[in-house]
Length: 99
Image 1: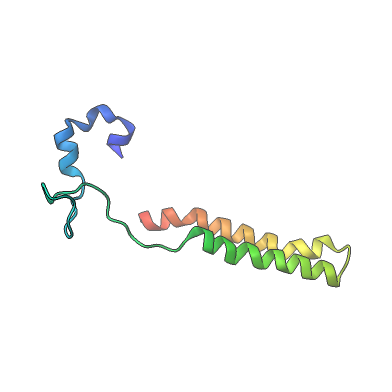
Image 2: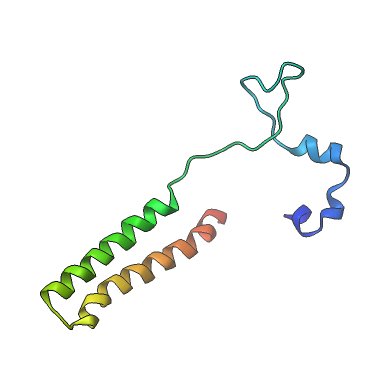
């Protein structure tokens, strides 16, 4: 993080290129087999997790309002709790990974 906060301390471009990860398998180009980049890790999609939390809440609100017309508090109380819990867990995830 030091180089992001003060990029003047990063040194020369040669030093920076040496610190980047290299491709370890497969071909990059016919002249040299060295490639610069990042190694990707598969993780759960935030969009899919969001859809698993928000879409059932919307369905619940619609069903509740169809069965109990005018009861907005009863319709939105459980989804609000679930969304707040999801937000709390989402915010605490980076701190859990750092420790």
